[in-house]
Length: 343
Image (cartoon, rainbow, N blue to C red; front, side, top):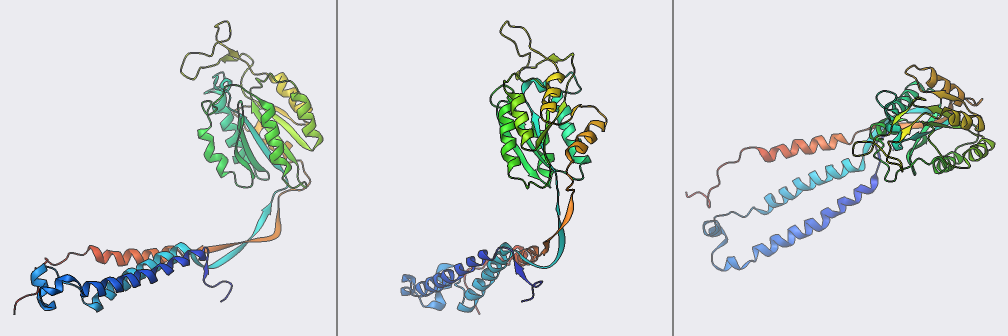
């Protein structure tokens, strides 16, 4: 068979064709058993239709029906096996640099000191990064008290784009904002990437962290070649933190908690990580600056010698034939008659 000829994507499905053998045997035995049934003691075979009001199909008609349904079953099994032929080969794109986004979805990100809210503004920044990106492989981790991997670093940002609307401050089961576990999870994901390109983390947050050892952890990542960039969302004036069921989050004294953008901490984290600090704006300046800083490797995106084979899938052809054959079962039928006609 030629390399570009008929090819099955999942040939293991063809084992289902073996089910036709026991079905045919059962059909043959049931027909033979019916021919020797007790009802034949009471009338001759040519008189049975008058007695029962039904007509047994002839042997040829019975096997014709079996062949008809066997053909439908065969076509469906072939469709499951994935017939395809003709393909094109395209070179694979190998990106040199990777950027893993850490998106803060803690309760303070629901503050509306930037319209419509900090989290909505942060999600828009991620969407802008995807839209403006031409060189980087992107990944996304959402975090509050614990990190949640939305998408590992890859060349296809569709998973990130599709998940953005579902990322809300109601998603975390436990309240809080802990950056250290998110950094540890990001380190694990980035360690498995090829060392040729640069590896960077982008933290999108309001900087509302109170964890000891953050600067030391970020510096340790920088020593491994993983730089940290930070993007601040919010204002220094801040705003009151909304509670999950209305009203406000209260402190120990019963007063509404007020959250402000901690630009100083975000700037210190970026400095310790050898990265860039920027504040989220409605322009593209912050997005382009982050992308330019992350794409700092001399290894740029390039076409490799490896090629991907893209087949033209034809599974729909047997499905269309099955649909056409099934239409014959919906044609109007003649009125049923009891027994054969009298001469």
